[in-house]
Image (cartoon, rainbow, N blue to C red; front, side, top):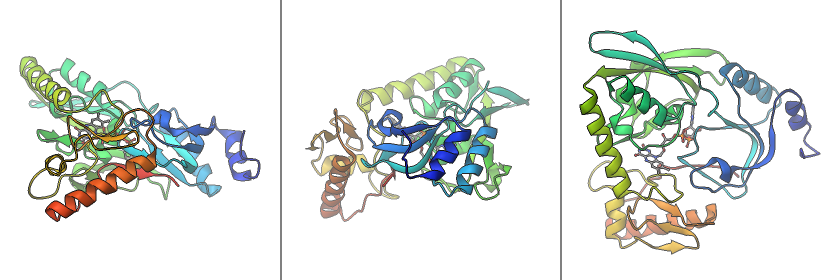
Length: 306
Ligand SMILES: Cc1cc2nc3c(=O)[nH]c(=O)nc-3n(C[C@H](O)[C@H](O)[C@H](O)COP(=O)(O)OP(=O)(O)OC[C@H]3O[C@@H](n4cnc5c(N)ncnc54)[C@H](O)[C@@H]3O)c2cc1C
């Protein structure tokens, strides 16, 4: 049922397929999050644009989700409209071939794992670092997803965005993109991207991809609900996971929120953790690490909601 007193919601619901009071724990890898007042899964960029235009005219706030694998949503959930990009996809295609390799075109809702598979199938190198990273390509670009062996900014050639103010589609070339560690400085919504990949022997690509994947599976709690590494690594010195582990925090638990036993920079949801449990544990970790090392850990996971 739509909130009876909210006329704006009712008007938006006349023109679009919307889910009402939809639990967001269904859309996050953490399996945490209260309801979204309204939730939409637009099927292409034009529907996305129309939805944003109407929501903006009605003064309804919009929150964007890709695969929901880097998000912590509050227990009260999100007011306004949540837009999930995962249906924004069509065939991944080769758009340019040159001596060194190929440029591929992909839409924002495509799963990163499918893009990796496409690259392997075409003997294209550049995405081996992304083995096992969940989520969409749009989310990966905004987060500048990466590991020790690479990050997505190395292969992004251009992005197509929906400008939130003008509601026009624009193409931004690599040289204009302001990437930094786990971040792209951008306010628009990515609807598509082109990636430049290099020709390489299939054997070499598969070896590197499989090595990275087995490393990830061996060292990270992939079977538990989480949002990946919770904290950013400090700019200098030891990685966040090492600081947390040396502070004696592996296995520390608040209700169903726990510091992973296998990788201390993962907070896992053992079963029924709430956002509040995660936040209490986060504060405990930050305080313990600060008391021991005088380092303030900053979160990599993004929090949304009331
Ligand atoms: C088990 C596990 C392992 C992980 N390992 C890694 C790792 O090795 N390296 C790493 O970097 N990350 C890792 N992550 C974190 C996460 O998978 C990445 O950050 C991923 O790229 C996020 O993509 P997403 O589509 O899920 O984004 P979401 O979590 O849905 O969104 C993240 C942010 O991006 C914004 N966003 C999403 N799509 C768009 C778009 N199209 N346009 C504009 N903004 C958008 C959202 O609003 C939000 O602010 C891991 C997570 C898990 C659960």
